Every structure is written in structure tokens, then in C-alpha cells.
Length: 395
Ligand SMILES: Nc1ncnc2c1ncn2[C@@H]1O[C@H](COP(=O)(O)OP(=O)(O)O)[C@@H](O)[C@H]1O
Ligand SMILES: O=C(OP(=O)(O)O)[C@H](O)COP(=O)(O)O
Image 1 (cartoon, rainbow, N blue to C red):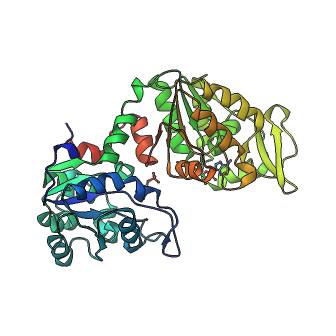
Image 2: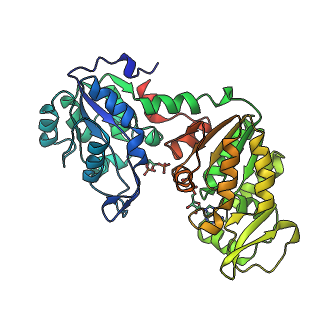
Image 3: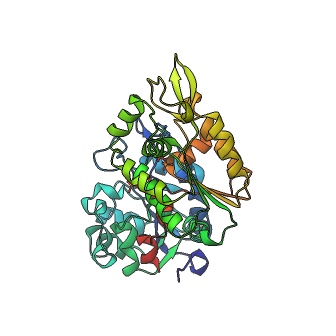
């Protein structure tokens, strides 16, 4: 059983809240605040109910351009919430503990990026995580721990799995909602259609295999780079530019895996046509006409695929979308993503997951999904039927 905010008497209590506000950062500024806005409900409820809130979060990965301090995140949360949100440039030192001890009722502080500390970028079992410097250092300053970081729940890192061994622990509203929807996929209306696009080919093939073997999917529609790899696996000659893209991205070995899956399951569908760039404009090529003269990579599915997939999607009981259908960042190649996502909003129930997928939904201004997951890897892990370490730690 996982305890939730409903089970917490928050008045005056020092709550360590792990959230996932890992966001695109550009020139030290937040380029997108969707993940911050997602946690507003949980944080506002805690602060309204008189908690003293210490926020724990990571940003980026060591060495990356987006490996940043959380000062800008604190400023934005301060704007989004009716309660004051401060920033502290320490995570578990005496300075951090003193700052938490000084919190008034209804006040919050964002502690520094947890991944500034080497142990936080390692995976541990919960008992070992409870003895890391971060958890050992900060736990004495907290009364309880609350995890709302669904998007990071597939990581077994100290700030995600270490506190429940030491403190009474709870799930936040984001975590609750995500587990309710994504954890009960078997109960959603059928036919169930998975649309797998985007560029994480290995993950998507794993998901396709798993949902087909577990009879969760009635149909799997492939698009994006995933669709291109499936086309190559079926012997389609998409031209050197697409082959080079797939090779350079490290997905060449996935062609055989995709081929095995296509041989084993009729429920997987590949695109009928693709769109490439020719003379600076979108140009569509039918797979039936291959081999043809193509000297640019396939960047989107074509209009016949959009129409055929769209019909399957619209008539679905449940559609689960992960990954854009094309390079939606370029207007000429956003047609597939726009067409398939809009069709999904007309299905009986629609669920979208993935960092870039959610960004595509916002950029294209598509509304009407039943659930937009904050998580990419975490959502896929749940949909594949695997346990999430941070959720298991809360149990
Ligand atoms: N045909 C394609 N060729 C190259 N890149 C593609 C293609 N289709 C989609 N993409 C790219 O895939 C990226 C998103 O994929 P992914 O990271 O798997 O999504 P998510 O974060 O939602 O899981 C986008 O940046 C998009 O440009
Ligand atoms: O952005 C995240 O995951 P996602 O890219 O799967 O959505 C989470 O913050 C986890 O980050 P990580 O993949 O660096 O561990």
C-alpha cells in the first residue's frame, strides 16, 4: 500500500518533496516550465495545509550543457505558487539543514541539484541508498518524505529510493495520477492501439515486443525513426541518407530485432509512404514504388500513412502514443505528428507519454488527450509491465 497526501497530517511538518523538474535549459534560462507546472498541485496543497517544504530535484546529467543550478527553477516556482519559494545552494550540508530548520509554515525552499553529488548519479538498492551522504545528511532535518517525481521513478538513485527506509513516506498527486492511469492499462477500453514513433528505437522495439507478448496491444503502428527501422527490416530501400542516419544513430543492430518482431507479430504495421526533403520542400514517396531516387533522409510519414493510421487510431478504444511521427520541429515534417495526434484525441481514450512527445503536443497546440504523462522512460517502463524502483520503495 502506498500512502498519499490524503494520509498526511501536514501542519508544521518538514516535508522533503522529490519532484522532477528536469527541463530544457538554454543560456541558464528554463526553456520550458511544463514539468514545474505539473507539480504545482502537490506543492500548493502541502503549503496550503501548513507544511514546511524542502524541495529535492535534479537537472541534467553531469557533463551535459543542461547540468545546471536550480536557482531559475526556484524563481519560476515562486511565480507559480502563492507561497514563497526560496533557493538554497546546498543539498545536505549543515547549511541545507539550517535552511530547512528555518522554514516557516507554508514556506518552501528548493535545495541544490541533487546530481551535483556523485552518489546521486549512481543506482543503489534502497538500504544502500539510505546510507549515502545525501540521505544520511538531509534525513535528520526532515519529518517525512514525499515522492512526486514520477518521471524519474525508473531510476534507483538515493534521493528517489533512499528516504523511505528512514522516514514515513508518501506519494504526491502527480505520482498518484500517473500510477492510476498507466498502472491500469489492462483495464482500458479495447481495441488498444500503440503508436510508437520518435527516435528511441531500442526502447520502442522492447515496448512493442512486450505489449504484444502480453496481449495488451491489438495493433502497433510504427512511425518516426522506429517506422524507418521497421521499413528497413522489411527490406524497403529507403536510400542511403536514411540508412546512414540509422547507422550513425547507432540503430543498425535494431534492424534485425525489428525484423524478428515483424516476423512474429502480424499486429505491427509499417508506414505506406514517407516524406523527404526535395528542392527545399516536402516530397512524398510511396514504399510500393521503391527503390526510387531518394537522396535525403525520411523525416516524416506520408499522407497515405497518416490517413490509414488515423482511421485505426480514431476507432481505437484506447490509443497510447509515444514519440513523434516525424521531425515535428521542422514545419514541413510536422504533418504526420499533427495528423496522428489529432486523430488520437478523437479515440475513446488517449494517453501520450514522453518528453519530446509532450513538447510536440504543446508546440502543435493539440488539446483533448485524456492523459499526458510527465514521464518518458518511466511511462514506458510501466507500460512494459516492469516495476519502478522509486514506487517499490514507497510500498
Ligand atoms: N523520421 C525521423 N528522422 C529523424 N528524427 C526523427 C524522425 N521522427 C522523429 N524524430 C525525432 O525524434 C525525436 C523525439 O524522439 P524521442 O526522444 O524518442 O521521443 P520522447 O522523448 O517523446 O520519448 C524528435 O526530436 C524528432 O525530431
Ligand atoms: O527527463 C527524464 O526522463 P525522460 O527523458 O525519460 O523523460 C527524467 O528527469 C530522468 O532523467 P535521466 O534520464 O537523466 O535519469
